[in-house]
Image (cartoon, rainbow, N blue to C red; front, top):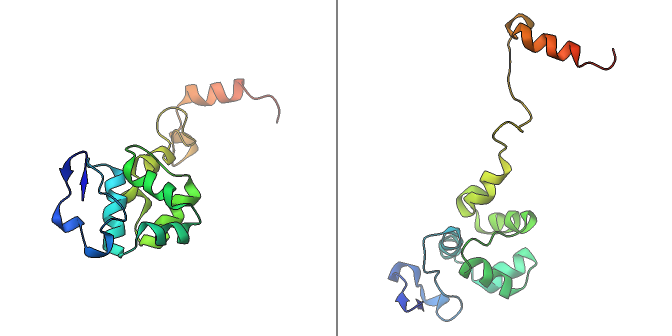
Length: 130
């Protein structure tokens, strides 16, 4: 098998995949999905049936760099392949983790006395009711 004129490694070319799908050219999450399919010995057609999507959709997930499936399809793929979502689509897993000033828990204090006094004053001053 070749992609963009470059041969895929022999380890990614078992006989049952010949002609079914092509190996992604770059080291991306699409290549991780391809490798997981090989490890689980599942063809693109079988994966499509298990996930309830068209075989062309599976092909897009594998060949298009940066393409991230919808959450329900990612979960179905992970279940079918026996892999973790973070291993197959690290970018999707990173999006789910909130970081920065908009995250829900900004600070934790073990006791009320551990909270800075200016923070208490601002909370009390900003209260609209009891």
